[in-house]
Amino acid sequence: MAIDVHGMRGAFAGPRLALPLRPLGTGTARRRPPVTALLTGALAVVEAVALLAVALHGLDGLLGGPSRPAGPVVAVGLLLLAAWIVLAAGSGAAVVDGSGRRMLVGVAVGELALVALLGVAALLVPVALPLALPGALLLAVSVPVGKLLLAGSPSVAAWLAAGPRVVERRPDPAVAHRGLATATLAVIGLALGALALVGPVDDPLGPGDIASTTVTAH
Figure (cartoon, rainbow, N blue to C red):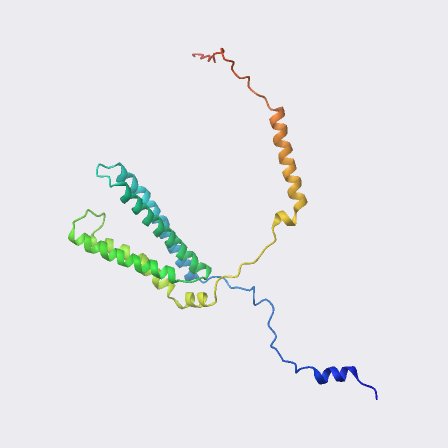
């Protein structure tokens, strides 16, 4: 009796599973950020730049004034201000990248609490402000409220739900064009060496020489 090899293999092999085909390009294709995400990131970056400008403008007058605070107080204040600036800009970049909005919401809530404390302090202690107190508070509150409204929009929620943006890996141009990079480096090295050898060199002054300068009056 002849034994069919294909038949035996089909008899002992397990059943095949029908897996759904995955469409090509779904792992790398990514749509662009929505306008609301871009506006959120832009507002956060503009706020960070404005905080830096205000800090640089007020730091000169604070350190040069007669009522200069102590060194540890200045160091702690600068550290807190630097952290605020970095968190403000980084939270906006995280929303644009699609990583999340938790940091942005936390920074905005902290800013609202700070504005509330400053408003209470301004009511208790009279302070000279460029604007009236209601106008100054409204202007200060508009930035964190705007960030919260933009970050809570449906388009930003859908953008963040899709996950962070897929970074496309590109080959290193120095590795891909190793010969051209080596030749360019060799040409630059030869040019610098030739310039060092051929270029004119001023005669140095001796121990007893005195440099003389001639001034011609017209």
